Image (cartoon, rainbow, N blue to C red):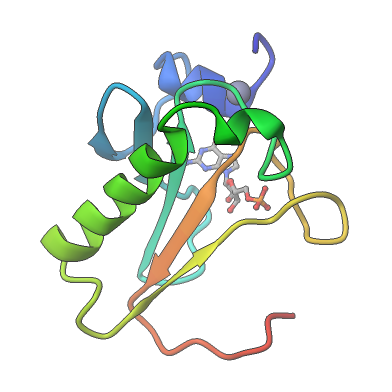
Length: 114
Ligand code: 5GP
Ligand code: ZN
């Protein structure tokens, strides 16, 4: 999508610090981290959010969680634990309308979220 920030990051029109990438998924550092590790895992295909039915097409979900599991293992996130967060819509605080999974780790977190 032409005016989508995350599509521009995928096309390298906006710089980002890439953590992991394959043909379907990109993971990069959040520009405003809320924890020592705060990455965003996004599909390269533009999908609005987790309510978008295209999420269930093909093997997209498998690719996203494959990337998350790969990073949890190779970056040692599983040791102390980590959180995967998906905000969908206004009440949840979704600010960028391109599906993204927050991968947050490196500090103790509270529950429930605010
Ligand atoms: P949301 O609130 O939509 O779930 O999360 C959007 C996230 O994208 C926020 O944590 C915000 O810091 C991050 N973000 C917004 N614009 C950029 C950007 O241009 N680059 C990077 N790396 N992260 C961004
Ligand atoms: Zn997009």
